Image (cartoon, rainbow, N blue to C red; front, top):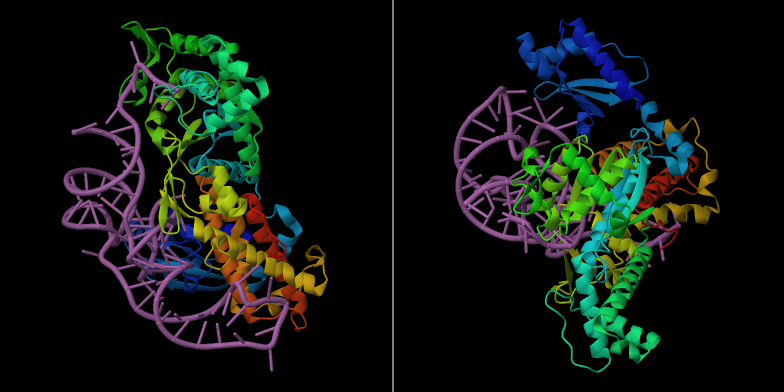
Length: 547
RNA sequence: GCGCCAGUAGCUCAGCUGGAUAGAGCGUCGGCCUCCGGAGCCGAAGGUCGUGGGUUCGAAUCCCGCCUGGCGCACCA
């Protein structure tokens, strides 16, 4: 914002004028309390000590030396221990309306990312069962984080990694083969460490229906081989379907098997060896991860010659780097947090910058319905699937609920609240605000896109709610930028709820159509509608014209 | 035992990189419907910011100890 820059520059100059040669860090920001103005600075407090004067006296001097262009500030006050508060001139505020309408669906976007190439990897579930609510939270968060980065001028790739190799797939094959036997009416038990969920029985029945009952008579090695292929294929298809319904799509699906096919493991190992961060001991190959802050060194290749889970993961992230990404952000379940230091250490060992790799941890989700917790556990095969949740609450509510809390907070998903069509439901509340703004245009038989700001806006829109609305609208781009910087989409849901609250209050208190202020209020309604729509779209949630 | 994350209103959670009187929603209590949809709006009560120290003009925020909870500490994935 222009006013912001002008004020900061004037403050710097004023500090020099009163004899401060080296300026320490100071703040100029929007105060929480509107009574403290539109902007406030702690400049006087941070330089008071060096000057050997009380902060308030310093503030007086600063204000006296302050030289600002006309039309920016209405009033300057000194308050509290020595804060200087700025109240912006009305024309500064009303400038937001034409800005919103001119930018349209791009309002809120910026180029602070400067085209930086970022890979956002999320969901990355093993193809061994249906996605559960925890995956849903990761999916919503990953997708929203990717959108935030996209909106702030990063070049984003949404990516999903599929572990289609390794022992968990062997377990899947053995479990499925057992289910095939059961489906054919024979006694068979799910092996130790296998997958007990009912879903594999369904897959087995489909196999027999399609391939014939003779399938169950195949030799065990052949049966396992086929089960492996069919199992991965059908469970992946199921997961992809769930994600599609959830509104998530990926630019890249990366298969673990590709790492082996393209010899990426060997290449990575050679790299690490060349940089002298590996060594052999007890027949195994180790990564010197303690050199980079890990608790202990980690095995990459076991003494039986097979690789640990860490090895392909390092190769995978090396491949991301080779593909030209400047940052790799992974959304992981919090149960993997012990793993972060290892991958981070491996990235260091490969010589990558410290900020290349970042893991965002997503805490587990508890689902409550009717005052009771719905349990889930992949091991026992009982869990709340993403599909069931979405079916019950709808995509919008599910996504919104996953996004409205910080990813690293444990949170309780209240199914009854998510389904509620009252103001107690935050998704509903925000969408309703959008529908109301839209409703005004429907009644007026006008296209919101057709309204154009007029010069009189600033002198006509003077009600407190109108001032508040304009301030909120002006804050949106900053909220998006900050949310992208911290990878925290909940800042956007919080913002939308605040904007919706003022919009509802305004709508309730004032009429638009047929009033003397109709023209200006239509502009305001169009701008509010636009920002609500933009915020919702950013999060992958629909903005209905009517509810 | 060691490590990571957390502990803020009855509940679910915000609190920006240290700022002014700690916020919101739900719930509770009390008001408001000739209206662009009341599927809504307004107000009130409610907090020793887990705890004890420290740093400084100023700490929910930074540092240290302790208590409580979650998770992680494999040649498993």
